Length: 342
Ligand SMILES: NC(=O)c1ccc[n+]([C@@H]2O[C@H](COP(=O)([O-])OP(=O)(O)OC[C@H]3O[C@@H](n4cnc5c(N)ncnc54)[C@H](O)[C@@H]3O)[C@@H](O)[C@H]2O)c1
Ligand SMILES: [Zn+2]
Image (cartoon, rainbow, N blue to C red; front, side, top):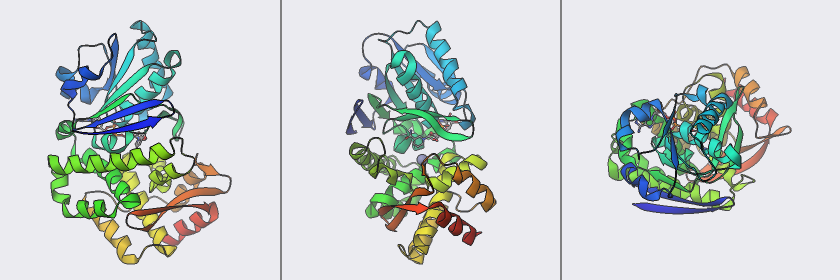
């Protein structure tokens, strides 16, 4: 087992990689715990859940809404939840984002922890203390920064994950390598077959690398005033795509990273060969590298980006594989780049 500690403003978050869902009881405080999960995870793993009341939500990005949050609040009231109650989310990024938000806001905040069950949430979503939901067509528009007390990444659970969800997770894995760690990028290239087959040693290594990188960045800049923006590599254009079609978060990020790599090449930061190398690794990991969405649609979606700063966007480039660079870029420059690619 590998462990990491994030000392957050709102409390410490202990991350246990390679721990097992069956042991989660050891991490729960005495007293009442309520589990929040989704239908798929419950169908697969209910028998491994600790013996506590379970609130089950549906699946898919479209349920990551305030309406779902409200329905959970009502169930918590019916279950006589008080401020001593602990909330345990068992699920992927959607369950963790919603449950973390519910726990942080219900009765001004309950203690909570996660068992992270999808690859994407183990390498990214469940770590770092961002919790929230979408609002109208805006991704993650309403939320809070609040650290879960613990995050358990049980890699055995990934064996039941559908293939396309595994690919979704690989997008965020490649992202971490691209922004911070060249040797990790090489490791993925060398071990891509094993990774796709969920070889436990390779997956353990990749989850550990991602969490090492992410927890380091979050520790330096929990509330995303600077450094943490690096983690948004591929996400500016990725989120715009996610808003228009629903390809899955990782798929959108993959397309967004290819675009950001091309933009980095156009700016003279990386070579054409590096750009091609990134694209081919993503393809080999069964991720999409192109799309058929009209550029105008992407530009419109970008203009509503919540991370926009007036006429500027903090865009994450890579200077080389393994090194990122945040630059305030005018909206017009991004628009020109996108139309030049159309
Ligand atoms: N908070 C953050 O910092 C952060 C970072 C990255 C992504 N996110 C968010 O995470 C979300 C995506 O997360 P996700 O990809 O985990 O989506 P998800 O939670 O929808 O999980 C993907 C699918 O896999 C199923 N599933 C999960 N674990 C399973 C298992 N072990 N076996 C079988 N099926 C399983 C789920 O039911 C779901 O259908 C997005 O909403 C994204 O915005 C948040
Ligand atoms: Zn992401």
